[in-house]
Image: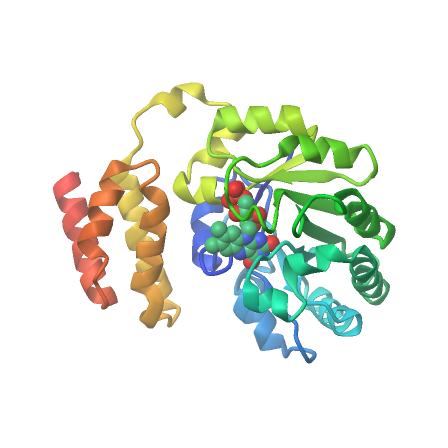
Length: 320
Ligand SMILES: Cc1cc2nc3c(=O)[nH]c(=O)nc-3n(C[C@H](O)[C@H](O)[C@H](O)COP(=O)(O)O)c2cc1C
């Protein structure tokens, strides 16, 4: 059973991938989506979405492979960009058929394509035909757009086009991120395809993981918000470490992660939004750490990253 870190646009960038994969519990991770709208993108666009490509041959510093995710609907353009990604060394090219964003969907990208399995087939087929044969093509879908009527047909289209793995976020676009995730639907789909299936959605702890595995009958698992809220989740799952699970969560370690994150984001030149990234992460950490809620309220109006750094240093000094 492989564990995969989910692609999360605006949240899981190279810095977060570095942090969340450093204990080696994830088998792979995926970039935020690279939007393909009207042209073959220059190499620098690929390197911007995946700095690890140049720094460490498409691996995080701990050696976890980073797959490239593309989002778009024009078969020829998707194929050209997939080919370029593959030639730049991407170990796997993944396609996003799950994004619920209004703007993305209006431009016929993401989950809106689930209304038309033939379009999905044509996109992936063109990509498969243009990509070097040794680079796997994978897809990530939701159960549907408005309802689940085409879930099986979409999965079959993905398989028929030559994808070698399918990740299913077990909700429709309309269901958004509202619990529950319908893990049993993954088992239903699996009866109709042969390719390995990754289950995704609403795994926050070891119990969810076990239940999802059982109900979905999946081959592999992808963790998203659960891993951001609890950076130890993948490791707990991998090592089935119940004793660590019951141990108090180490807030000082998280504060140090936050400080590392903001410093590293600033060093990479993204001074402007470094503080916002910290607020965003705190909003997830507060699910597990009550201290994160208090800190979030204290820093939510901070604009300057330097102020955020001082505050985090103060917190570490008083908490340790
Ligand atoms: C902030 C955010 C950004 C996301 N960005 C992407 C993305 O770029 N590509 C993608 O395929 N899915 C994206 N997703 C969906 C996640 O990969 C995942 O399918 C979803 O969060 C459900 O898994 P979870 O319940 O474990 O979080 C995003 C989700 C969130 C919350």
